[in-house]
Image (cartoon, rainbow, N blue to C red; front, side, top):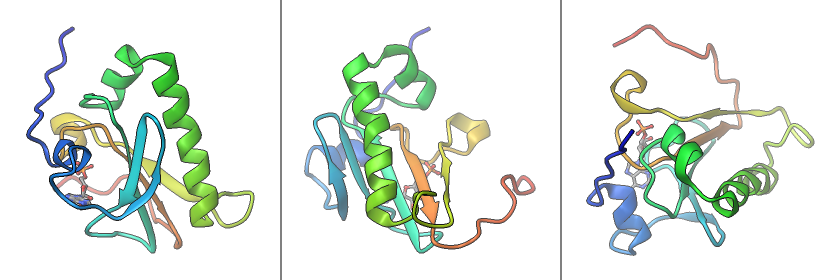
Length: 126
Ligand code: AMP
């Protein structure tokens, strides 16, 4: 299976420093920044620095070092943002992929949402 990655997507531009972002955490392989249109008091996007279009692309082709770095970054962000279930009421992680996932930006990102109750997981299709 060949994944297609469009390097003109907005998160690729953020990674190249062409567009500013509100960084929450940066590690060797991962960047996390605040969503420009937050849907909750905490709304952080977590992206790998590598050119991966979706979670399944990343899971299939990223190196072990990238996967570990990305996963550990999520724990750091949850702690930093005060939404870890260790310390608070929890959060929701979403990763939209492709047309059925209604993905807008074709570079893998996890949404970490918290700071309020999120409601039902899946809304009626629009
Ligand atoms: P998705 O529908 O999962 O692809 O979500 C894309 C997300 O990226 C949306 O929540 C947008 O608000 C967010 N977004 C788009 N452009 C930017 C940007 N320049 N900085 C931060 N977040 C952005």
